[in-house]
Image (cartoon, rainbow, N blue to C red; front, side, top):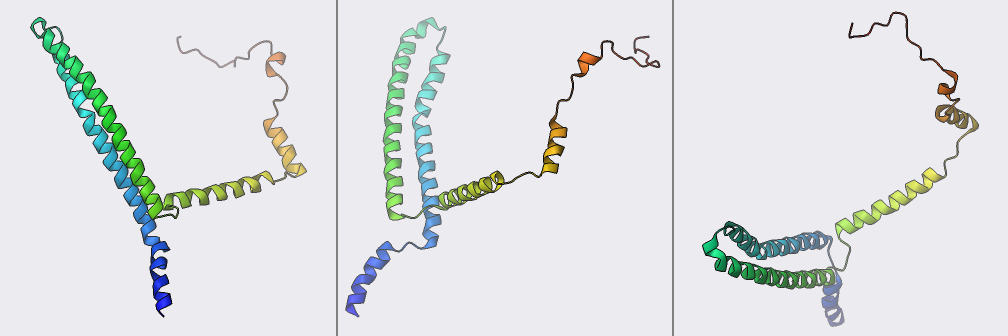
Length: 167
C-alpha cells in the first residue's frame, strides 16, 4: 500500500485533466493580452511627445524646446523598444512555462489537425472521381469554344424595327 502511495504523487504530476487544456488556451490568451497592453502603454509616451513636438512647429521662440523634445522623443522610442523586447522575452518565458505545465495540444491545435486530416481525405476522394463517357461529352459541349462567329459575320445585323433613342 505504501508503495502505491509513493507512486500516486508521480501520477498526479503527469496527469493532465481535459479541463486544464482549455485553461491553457485561456492563460495563453491572457498572457498575450497583457503583452499587447504593456507594449501599447510604452509606445504611448513617444506618441505623446510626437504630438507635442508638432504643436511647437513654426514657433521661433520655442526652437530650443523643439530640439529637446525631439531628442527626448528618440530616447523614449529607444526605451519603448527596449521595454517591448523585455515584455516579449517575458511572454516567451510564460508561453514556454505553459507548454511545459500542459504538454497536451490545445483545443485549437487539435481542431487544426482534425481539419487537416479531413481536408486531405476529401482531396484524395475528389481526385479519384472518374467521369463516364456521357459526362465527358456533356463537359466538352459545355466548354467548347466552337467556331469563330466574327469570321462568318462581316456585317452587323440591325433589326428593321430598331429606333435610336436620340430621335
